[in-house]
Length: 421
Image (cartoon, rainbow, N blue to C red; front, side):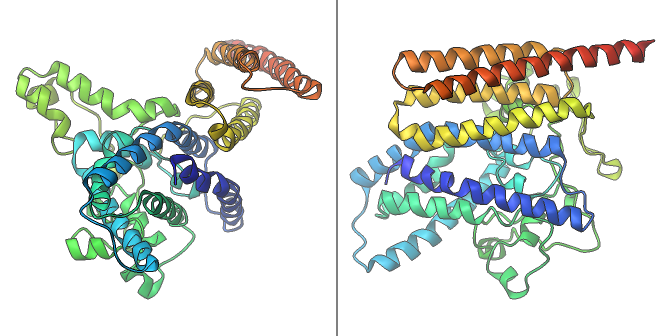
């Protein structure tokens, strides 16, 4: 099974994911719970979309390394019934995931990748899709023991997808504790603890499918009804930019390394415990941390007219992402890389609008120009074809979006002038 086969599991699951998100959204409204905010949900989905498109390339590399280790260094064949190979692989993957996840919270450079999943200050099913685009850099290391033990790459890829899919449903506040299941499996209750930044809950409950690892290795904490969970991280993202979400901690570590006086600190900061900073840097460049006693979630209000435009463009970006994932195996890698770059800029522009940045019109014009140029380039290189109807739809989109954008620009400019007078 290649990386595309693994990614197909995710592509097939996308309609199910969005269907369940819609159901949870309805349930939140019915129960009068404010578990969703448009800007936060779009940001979570944006990081997830960026993750699955970059994952076409990164997972190919990860599985390539796994395949090489399996073929060159495996200690032998698993001479047992196939069902048992699957069961062993499923359990072994979750154990390896536990350590990858745990060290992802305990080591600076690994936290820089995993941090993305924890940045949301809400907790709903969109949070489950909030995934890193850089976790592949070191993540493959933790699964090499499975290759050495003789777990076939096809089974490894399948159980990895199963593990990821399982974790989707536990990202909800609507499901209470589930009795005896809490002792064995990861559930919404014990995973809510994992996403908390409350002191009593920090760095707990790392399992993907099985919570047993946490109970056995001393990293388990139970959700308490006496203390409200505050979601997010101690150094908040405070942005709706999915590119910055992936780069935030890397940039912070680089700046700290650059400002450090001792060369030992410059080299070791990457592998120190999460949050460690050289003493001299911490004194000269203190960081503002979340005050849990006076916590306010990051939020920026934008006009309803702009919000409708953002949602419209975001929905089309979701459609583009799903299409890219469905057809990427029919095209060379540069095709996916090109469209991923366009997707990344589109999501950046959407985040720019959600933050009410004054130059959002500039970026939107560039995004539409790049979209048109990309379509023409792919047609010229025979990687894409349009019927007459397809060209008309594409032209209609650009005309409609440009007219809407112009109207927004004028309306917001007039509103700004009125507010100053």
